[in-house]
Amino acid sequence: VQLQASGGGLVQPGGSLRLSCAASGTIFSINVMGWYRQAPGKQRELVARTTGDSSTNYADSVKGRFTISRDNAKNTVYLQMNSLKPEDTGVYYCNAFLRSMVTAPLRDYWGKGTQVTVSS
Image 1: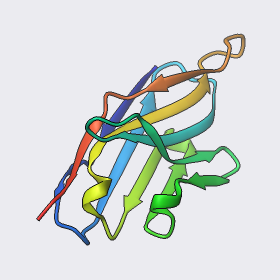
Image 2 (image 1 turned 180 degrees about the vertical axis):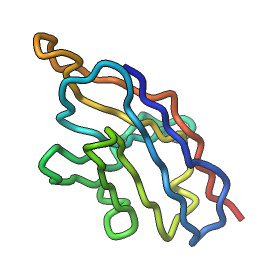
Image 3 (image 1 turned 120 degrees about the vertical axis):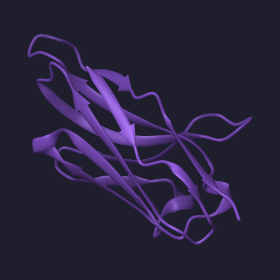
């Protein structure tokens, strides 16, 4: 299983970016897909996640500005980030909690990360 993220970059404060992450390989079912981020010198933190029934969770710091969505047919999760702030800067990692085969246990998979820099 591989997670391929894209969409990071440099944006001015107040701007927008859209991240995408596609899961590929042998996948039986995906329970949760989400995004985490890690700023320099800080621990990795949850940004947003969504389950198969489309319920969502957001970090308090991004509520009202970020929207997570998921295309189950494409095994892809998106993160629309609006009103970006310098404190949103970091490496954003895609995560999927999935079962690769019907007999396999659920486990976490991670993408390599994509850099988001919010700066004027």
